[in-house]
Image (cartoon, rainbow, N blue to C red; front, side, top):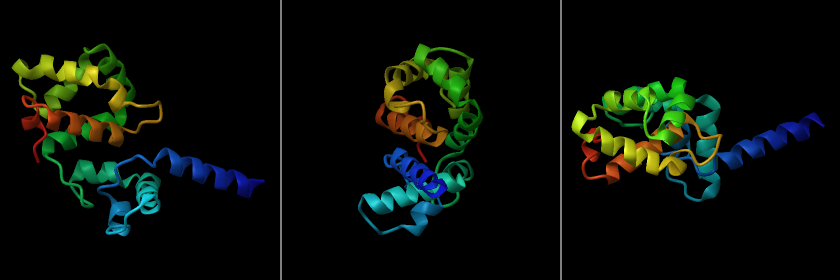
Length: 155
């Protein structure tokens, strides 16, 4: 029975990470150059198991290249994800303002910043198991697509 529980937990973990972005971290380095769902899941699983993708994002190592502001945001999200999610769903709050400050979002762009994150809340937090690293990836991607906000996440 114990083996079945362990196997089930591994499969559940792997399936929940199938859509993670293993673009950096040890998992991405190990499975580099391989395509298909299996290497993708294995890379994401490796990153999640060792918690190294967020580490790579915050330190700019392990093949993760981000600017200092994004690194600061990732570190903040790591320990405040629930508060940030709550504020983001409302479109206001001190935790959302903290993200803006960490990213260096100018006062003139903050309403746009809050609006973009609130309108895309479901994409940033698609389920209750969304990790801070996944949320940061989604936020960066959304900001890169916005003409007035892309300057804050440029590497």
